[in-house]
Image (cartoon, rainbow, N blue to C red; front, side, top):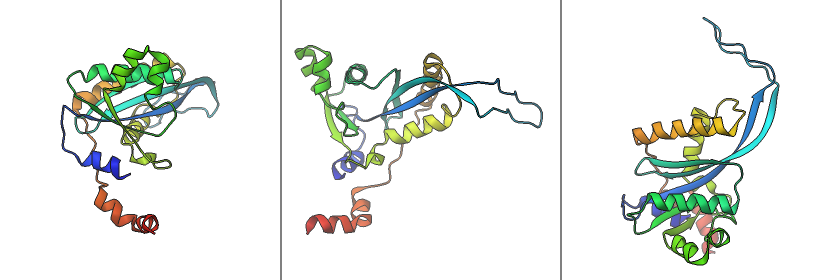
Length: 207
């Protein structure tokens, strides 16, 4: 936890951008009955019945201090999807010495995924672009990408979308607007606050 919090306390450095990565599964849902459109003085009405059209996954990388995010909608969240996304992420930060990547501690979230998708020289070169830091188990709330995914859910994915193509188009438009506004994330939970609020846990470790 303190390693992640220390990373968040570092000043902005374009040579070592801090990027948070996370994934969100989405259900593709369609209407069984056509919704009744809005009328003056009456909101749109939607029947509670829906039809499932499968699932997809939103891959989210956000640079909190720069207000930039890169998002991709995939069918699954396999090692191949992760590796391909990391390759795209690395290609965006071509001038960075190292990309500091904060992510959840999942079995796909490590350089071994690169070696299952790319040949060894490319996988090694890609792994050298990242300095990976992991949130503790059961503490994924320390990942700022969760904040951005929450905003995406409330502002864009708050309705039924039946097709992955349409969902990807909606997400792309949302990302373009957020990036244009350079919407940043301000993180307030520091190491000192953690030591104060979680004092009992620190004493347990010490003992």
